[in-house]
View 1 (cartoon, rainbow, N blue to C red):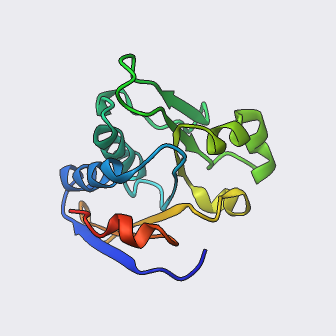
View 2: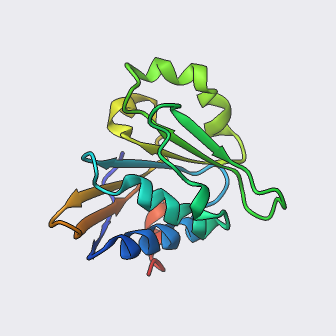
Length: 159
């Protein structure tokens, strides 16, 4: 990833983390890949719930794909782009992504969000948006968002 400006936000509770995810979700377009990093319990899945909401999906349907590795959310009305939610924690290598249909996912019309993206760093496309969630307190989180062009321009309106 080339050096890019970083947006940093602090959230004080789950609702703010979800709201920030929704702000990011509203900026995403088909073909975008979002790489999430953060310790266990940092709020990655909650952030994805917000992304889903921002895209027009029900956040209530979003759950961690830890054991199934991938969830795909399709809007029956087709008013929201498909959302593919991957948890790479249990993957041994980026090669394991092939069995999930990785090539089709990142080259298609879906938006792909990957938790534990650092485990498959070499497979991430150069245009991926990188988001790191850090604990700074029991409920407080620091969320850093960065990406190469065209992300700085697209992210300038983030709330």
